[in-house]
Image 1 (spheres, rainbow, N blue to C red):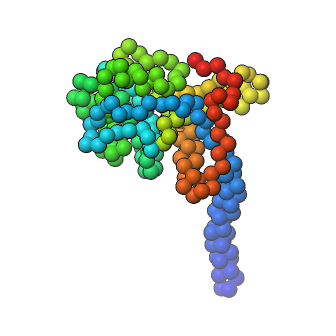
Image 2: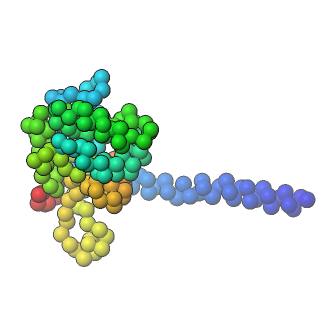
Image 3: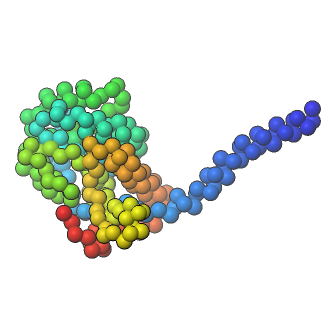
Length: 238
């Protein structure tokens, strides 16, 4: 009886301490990561835009995914659904995180119908729509660095990460490990293609976690920034 009790306590002790040991092993690595690169530090805010809520929606002081869905948002349901299900739903619990969809003025009713299509009864308080004149939309887009231009219909399936200080985040070196081993030339990642599941599910999700970790550590006062600015690397931007 006594032997059985000792074995039981031993098993319970192992089950309790194994996760603790695992976390202790991970702890040092959590403080040794490369912060998400700043690829542009002159992003325009949204002062000239109206919103679908009672408050002004701005990028400043938020961690934002900004999307441009154009004149016919209802035609972009795949891109928007991928963004919602693979990114928004996974990060909406984080403080100051938001998704902002930019649309031209006059598309308010389309936005309302579009919202019904992608809303699966989840918490959509941090998913916003803003409306502006075409020139204002282009000005905001042109303040970002992008792999592709904005379409004539004011749409792109690429989305962008903007930090609390109106800086665009991405990767100055998006090479795979194999490409680095082969000494291939560095190339940048400015935005994330919502049509490509891999881009959204892996690259964007990983990059957002890194950025959120950065801000969490800043709040605790133990963040040591080694983030590289765009001008520090000899990269030819598109």
